[in-house]
Length: 147
Ligand SMILES: [Zn+2]
Picture 1 (cartoon, protein in one colour):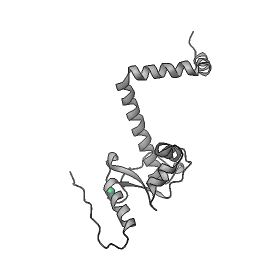
Picture 2 (picture 1 turned 135 degrees about the horizontal axis):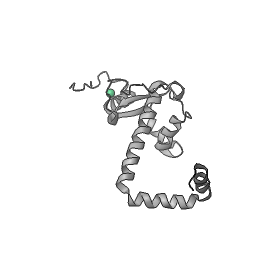
Picture 3 (picture 1 turned 60 degrees about the vertical axis):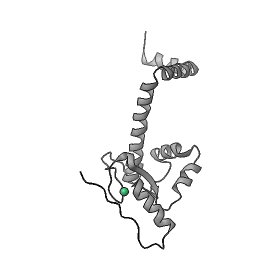
Picture 4 (picture 1 turned 90 degrees about the vertical axis):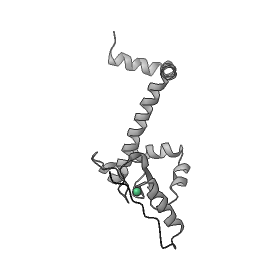
């Protein structure tokens, strides 16, 4: 008869069998798997952004409003993690395991967030240009359509 304990024992004793079964399921249910992973990754992304906005894993309340620090854009698909002192791409790519592991480390509290903020893609581009050309006196001004 099925029991939680027997199921756990079976999982511990047969990791290869289960891995194979999972692979078969993924390959026979590709659309469902893709939908699950899309949702999972979106939730992970939201959590990572919340932690950055909260100022660290210890301060997260779950009520953080996820928006661009500069223009207050709230479209999550437009938002990016920004390194305030630059070289964000290099830092994330140099992290063992790359960007995915970097944001996992943020969620696990292994990486501090004091050097990070959230910017939308246009604001991130401007931020980058301002760092690259500090002598320029004029920068593009971004305004968002209000609906
Ligand atoms: Zn912005």
